[in-house]
Length: 276
Image (cartoon, rainbow, N blue to C red; front, side, top):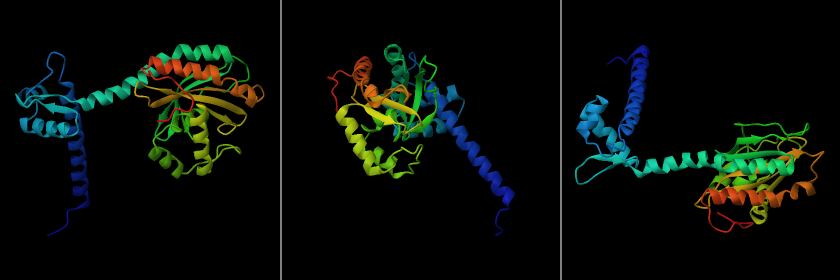
């Protein structure tokens, strides 16, 4: 038997890709079919809503059940949204709640310190700035909103990942750690020691390790479960911020993150060195 020609193989590959995309779209429409007025729907009704075969609905529904995104009522065999969606929604809500709850305290910190205030979140072993308030002074750290930056050499990143699960830290430190300035620490053993110091003190510091001429301090923000979901940082030029002056910001910073954490549902007493 002759081997299929290359154009035929490409055609089959294209068709398979379209089929997969079609299945993904149908699965999304299936989940969106549920509403407050229709919290449970059977296969026939779903097939009618989606205008697809019942066999297709059954196959997709079983896959979604296996992933926890759907559940099947054993009494009537109808489907309903699963708790897996609640978990995903909670992740989204945390990220939406964090900047909203933090905003007034970020403004207070800028007014108190006169320096740039940063709100960052973890992002695949890095850190992303989701809120930046630039210093009103002429010489200031510039905003980098939305940018992903290495976490190992920034105060905001260290304040977050010092409290991350060991596996997450191991993965981050196993990757290439590119020196961003002559002062950047890239030795994994030294970084682990720095993370331990952050857990002990409750805040992280950087001294021209992420950007030349910039110093910073940051402390972690926790959610209702006690997990660190972000960090608030204060950064400014070394011409204005000695290390002593920077560390002097630690108490108002810790007070701010404690208040933000409590507004996110964290009820335990906020203490220096609180671990995972």
